[in-house]
Length: 427
Ligand code: NAD
Image 1 (cartoon, rainbow, N blue to C red):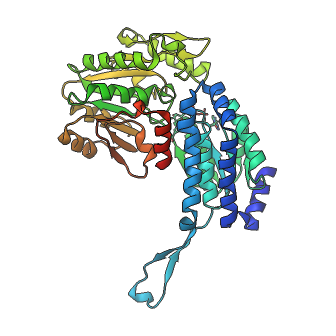
Image 2: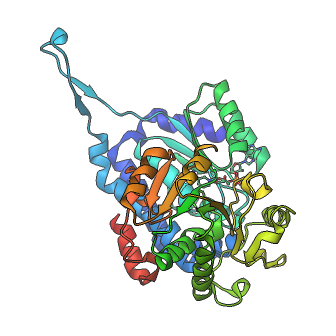
Image 3: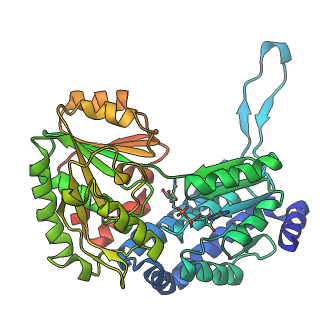
């Protein structure tokens, strides 16, 4: 493939290893993001009907934050680290020297198509590599905008965009890469890993899963409801890998939680949520049909206690809560990745740990409580990619710290947008 051969030649020239080249590319990313903010918002609206504040907060600020962090830290990342030597090698010295791998393939997904594409590209450049980005064809407006802007602003001898669907990705996967970074479903993750194995290429797979949230009777009900709404429906209508997938709470507390969620949902999206400009739509008709099938499964269709409205023409589904769903229902056996929120009830809140641990390890797990003992038991008993207490999804902004505790006395979503942007930029 000509594009890969050109990138190999560029890498071999040593150009991408220099500090100045890497800095020039981060500055180009910041420039294109600043100069085309409106186009980015428009592309995200076209692909997902993503509300402007979500586009700014999660996608545009996310890219700027990563580019700025790389500008700030690059010197330090490039500086060799002293390593200890031993008595046997005395009087020697040793260093760990970071070096780029070569040509990186980034296969990106559709739910955060701007930020998830650029974050991987920024990482590849920060390490001094050349890179091919394959954005998701399922978000076509953003894919085409990424191709245009990267072509115009960045060094095209080192950073290229290849647009396309399965045949184009398959052709890319036949090439030899030095690393593949893939974000998407487990099913395609297996295809990527198998293709990489042929060349013994290392892979980073950023996959999905079902993220549980435990709500204890000792949680602040109003704050919990608002934060659950922000993490579930306010994050791309649930089409977020770390979005809470299902709730675990006690039988006696569940009706109170449902009441609080319904009350707060009306404040967020009004009486006609399908008309709300603040709710993203479902990405396409096949995901829309998948989600309606989950709702219409006879094991759960009678369990809808709120929502359930859908509009095939606009691809919108109202925030929907299902109470007491059985564990063998369809909705409990795949990642929901949409605006449906099932509740499983348990006798004692501690029983939730067994429900979670009997399943695949989740990408994220959440707990709402003011009980210090329960917090400790949660961190001790539940293993997940990330844990948050009294928050959802927020831990991704403070990685690599794993667990985040926030006090339940403020709600992030009540802050004005400017303040939220400042906080995100700060982190
Ligand atoms: P998708 O359908 O856009 O696929 C992702 C990429 O794989 C695309 O670029 C696509 O062209 C390519 N692809 C699709 N089928 C292929 C095939 N047969 N062969 C080769 N390439 C193929 O996205 P998706 O899979 O629907 O993504 C949703 C999933 O991504 C969810 O499970 C979600 O949880 C996960 N996700 C994870 C993270 C994370 O950071 N862990 C972030 C976002 C999304």
